[in-house]
Amino acid sequence: MRSSFASLRGWVLAILVLGVMGVMPVPAAGQSPDSAAVAVESPVVGSLYDWIDTGSPRATLQSLLAVTDRMHVLLAERGVTRENERELALLKQETRRLFDLRGVRPQFRDDRAVETAVRLREALARVPLPDPEDVPDETVMRDRMESGLAPVYRIPKTPVEIVLVREGPEAGRFQITSSSMDLARGFHADLRDDPYQPDQAYIEGLFEEYFLSPGRLIPVAWIRGLPEWATREIFDQAVWQWVFLVVGFTLFVFVGVGLAHLVRWRSGRLGPVRRNLLLAGELVFLILL
Image (cartoon, rainbow, N blue to C red; front, side, top):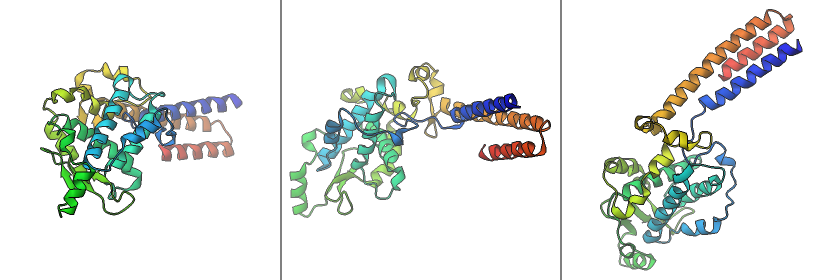
């Protein structure tokens, strides 16, 4: 009887492993399965934190470029790794300081900020960026406000606005507006097929690295070896991710049904008490499935 129980336990463990690997959505780059538990300590914490400056429209724009450039550097070679996931987690947390997220639920703010930053960075790389000296700094914005002008700056040839926040924990800082965040997806989609500006071509691949690449569960080299059609985006996921999800879930269901039949077959050889326990375990497993 002990060997039968051990065999059943082995089946259960195998199914649980397959279920976790098959049903769990494949994390995008920068979204490792345990990212919520990852500490933010990093050898470059100080320098990264200094990058996020929202004291003026110029500082906010430069911070957006710096953060996404760093993200691209980290993800370009090997995707999410054990060595870079802490720095990526820090970047994700810090990026939200660039955006007015008061209308976003707290649990979604990090993801919304990073996703918007990536889309904006890819779109901005396709339009001529203004010279930093042409973007208002603190002194220019102060003079504008004293003259009665609104404390807002729009990046030329884009829908992206940076405005002074007047209330809340970020009061007194210049952040990218919530309306600009809402327009980010369309802004990027409209320009996605346009060529990069010559001085911004180095950012090519950032969108795919963040949205369409695996986390640490799958080597990024495997994904980069797939045919082009497998990496196309459908509803913010790559084709290979949808295939992985469907195949994994189907496998999980078939194994679950097989376990149910196995339990019923085993229960026919047991006494009433053990048979009822096995049947109850089967019911719980199917509910969880």
